[in-house]
View 1: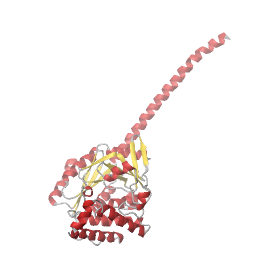
View 2: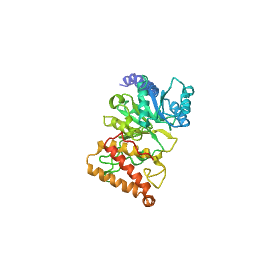
View 3: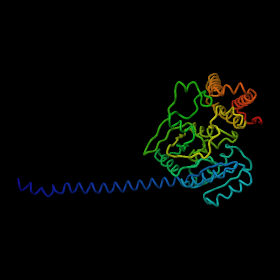
View 4: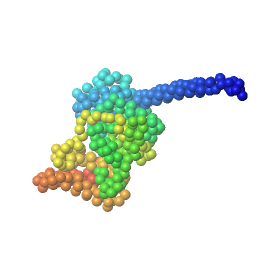
Length: 382
């Protein structure tokens, strides 16, 4: 019995050694597999970056902004950029035309429009040109003052791959200075259009707020949206065949919401990625601090107010399920957000009745045009 036990002892010694060998071999294979997966992920991310074409529209004399945006675009890793010169003066156009000498003719395309066609016409041309490029897979829409941070595009590619690399998934970069995005991540309230709402105002939202879906993985955080602004919107070019290009008839304001709503209404998803940061180089006209709601400011151009209201009302037409509730929401919006915004606003209506009357007349005309889908009537001259 004793001799038999001693005969088994050498074999018992080799049991832990064999297990150790198998464990070491397994760990080695596992490490190589992890390294391989990491390399494949990096190659996939790099392919996404190189397949991204930025679509940018510039106007006026904003080349100093545009240069910073292009520097950010290429530093972030985008493979190409299309810049639409939206009817700038000849001297500015000449400066824009020289930009390929700075950034490389192989990665920058300049398209000049003879007249300013508004943001809708400009992005119509920019997105179309980007989509026609054979090497383009994703289009990154940017205003000429949206400067990307170095890791902004990489964050989009990582999030998209982690979500399954589906063409149905669209993403939007996070603009730190834009109230919409700050509010989205602070309140987690879905950014979209509630039925019967007017400019985001509805009695229904006061009683029940719809929460946005949250996606988080590997330090990335995204919140789902129903619609997105152009600045930072990133999508697969196949969507152009499904929903068409931006509607040039809208000219200015909310043409981006119209375009992106078509995507979500046709089964797409839009997620705002907090890790993909853009810096706004210029403050929007709509967020200037004032005691008056921006529609009433006399220094603001009539066209801005008219197109803003007309286009938003036009888009909301598809969400009006009860005309009476919608009209009540319009009245409540005017009372709470404009007339009684604050004490100074009330006083302003009494002190400047003629100026206020002109603005209210303009607002009424814009609402009427939006409801009727009237794109022929132009805003009155100042």
